[in-house]
Image 1 (tube, helix red, strand yellow):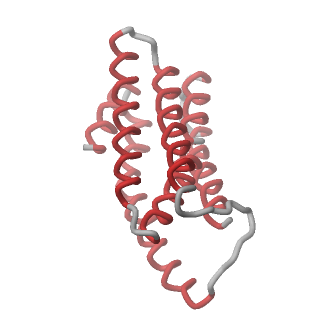
Image 2: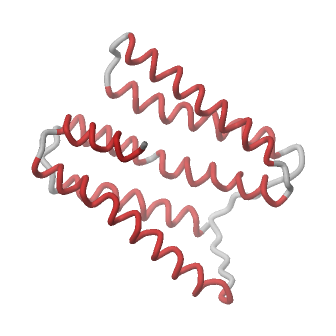
Length: 168
């Protein structure tokens, strides 16, 4: 439940800067659709916890290899056939959906996860979790604020190239 709520908050935080930048409507819609993959990523990380608890990391490794290979193959095909940015966004979401589907299938062999929207907080761990989460957010924010500043100062292609370099 809390993971879902925080996923929604992260999507909202991703979309707020769109009000202030001069992107075309198509680009804004693609960013909106791509930001929805944050929720899928959050759901996918839920299964990592299941694999860790049951000491079945080989399933996680297999799913990650399939996910990365499917994404790479689709991106290569999209670039080769010059299908455009919308197809790249679709490839990202599609490979992530494939990963979640495999996680659901594999995890049922040894666990029956219940996904719910109920929020259950363990107050003893809330303070340390809040501190580490805040530190992680601040670290991520300081790493990404330069992209926002570049958005105001440089063309979109330069920002995209810089973003690609920060991912490496």
